[in-house]
Image (cartoon, rainbow, N blue to C red; front, side, top):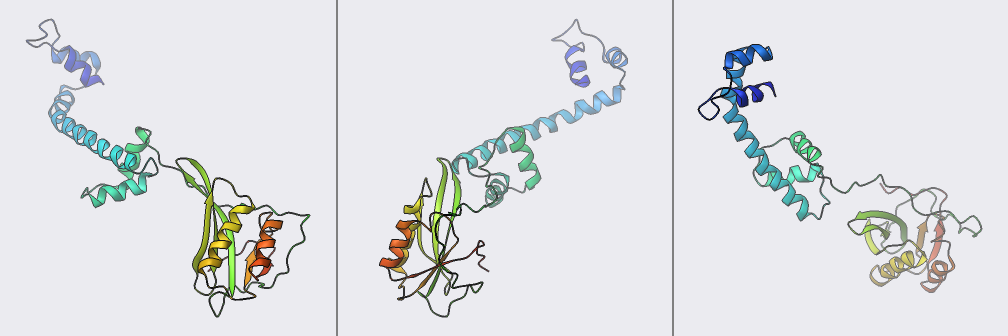
Length: 232
């Protein structure tokens, strides 16, 4: 700031009423060599600023192309794919200074709430989350996802033999119909065997009459554990 002030107030052809550099440096208590060093570095600083301004425009384009979803890590990866040799820290600084933010993915938490009044199904699985044959043992769960339209909920059904998602459903709610839609898809494409075990937690969606009715219609056995299951 001091050097800029001296440069603006010094005597030149355009500013004949200005002061000498020596006088201004003494008044501002800096050495003339410091001012001239700043003056010599100014073209390079201007060039760096122009380059950064171009980079900011690319970052904004990448961010807009992701519909605002990308944070610094993904923007950095996109820039590297385009040939930029740039550090992630610099991308983070630029985005922070210009308030360019991605959608924050919050830590996954368990959504379903236990219905204390509903009678739970027996725990037929224990902690054995394996299956010898496809279509004999399934596990269901619900998670939530941030989108530009707000939070959406995803119900999945996984075959424990193949670890494949054989059924899923997404909606802006997590009522019973969300999990029944996912199970219907699994029944349609998962080649489920009679007596196949459907394991879930004791959330109200899974203890609902609608879900239990579907379990019976599909000739499945409902299984519930006390704790959230873990697939490894």
